[in-house]
Length: 182
Image (spheres, one colour):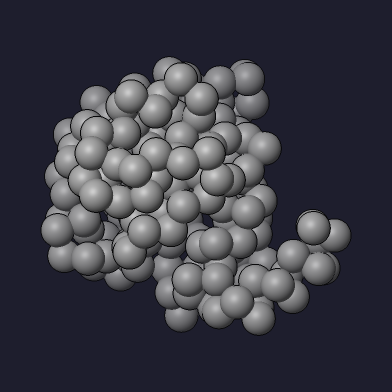
């Protein structure tokens, strides 16, 4: 079974993070919420506190198949400022393992050079941060092992794209139907 980690930093966008966790778990994907804050309770950008499953220092990166960065402010900046997480992202990117980001978080990928020559999208106003990308206004862009999405309103198609990657289109379509999406 594939395993995914969704990273939580103070000020994360709650819907983006929790939609991915919920939909991936419904699909049977092992999905952990990982706090980079040194404590399991993390407060999102709209003052909703969430209890992570594990702390960053406890995460078993060898067992992970995908790293997911939700957006939100200052959550995105806090994720990018976490050097241990950025080092793990670099390893995933360089070895072709899957990485995904939504809303403002694709800017992290742009800053690190992951989007060069790739199709990518982000929250409006962050396009200039997608260095080297072919920027689109699509809800979701899957470009090789890198997936990006635009924001809270695209959280469901973003999560379904992750499900499709690991479980196939049929499972993603079936799940979309059960949650009355589309």
